[in-house]
Image (cartoon, rainbow, N blue to C red; front, side, top):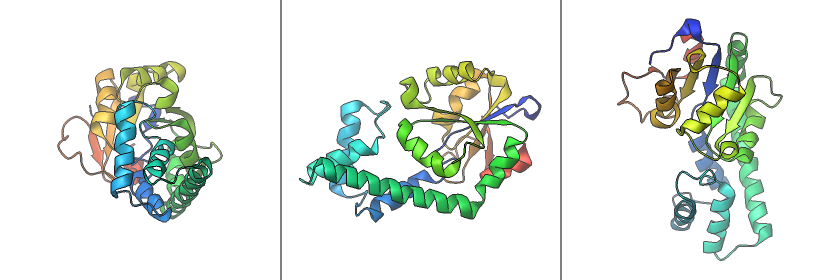
Length: 228
């Protein structure tokens, strides 16, 4: 569905690879912690966690679980080592996000959009991991009125429940919402079916080129200022 500008009251963002280049930051943070994310033990650790929980489990992206399993495979697990590794990882991740937000002047975009629309976030991932990111993206709660994580609902996007929960708690209707995400299937397909407007951002993810009809595409979030 092409967005209907005159009806939009709320802009709902995905977080990872939509607001910030999370995939790149994960990779860089692993390296800064001395972990090769493509190394055999770390890849195996992720695979074991996902296999145990299932890919759609709300904790299947939990880095604490990845790191715990990784340290076990390295024969180096202690609670102290795990906490140290998680602390270092979050430290580097926050530094990268802070630097990006400052250099991209993304806050200026959020401020301009906030003048006209209610801004919200619906995201897969654990609540703690997303709040850590949000601390650098919107530390004072200036821009985003609502953030809903899959962990809170017990299901991940594109499950219908997470969107229905959003509409109910935020007291809004699909036709008054614009959903912005980097992944068509995960972020936009369900909102389209529910009657919402959508925009696919390819700023950090250009793997959705096949979807030419169902939603408007932009190359950067900065284009929202021109589109809206």
